Image (cartoon, rainbow, N blue to C red):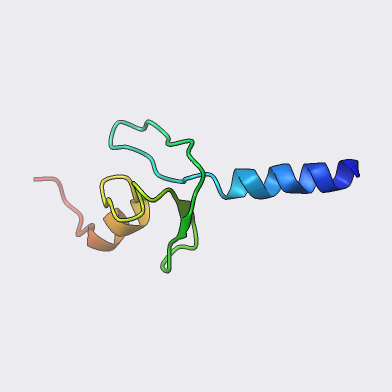
Length: 66
C-alpha cells in the first residue's frame, strides 16, 4: 500500500504545472493540459500563455539580443 501512495505522489508531482514566469516564479497548480510539443503539464491558466510556457518561447526564439 505504501508503494501505491508513493506512486500517486509521483504522478501528482509530474502533473504539477510546469509553467515558469518570466521572473522564474514557478506555478504549483495541478496541470490539466498536456503540451503537444514538449509533453509537459500546465494548468489551464498557463497552457496557452507563451510567457509561462518555455516550449513556446523556444520555438519563437530566433536568437540575438540586440
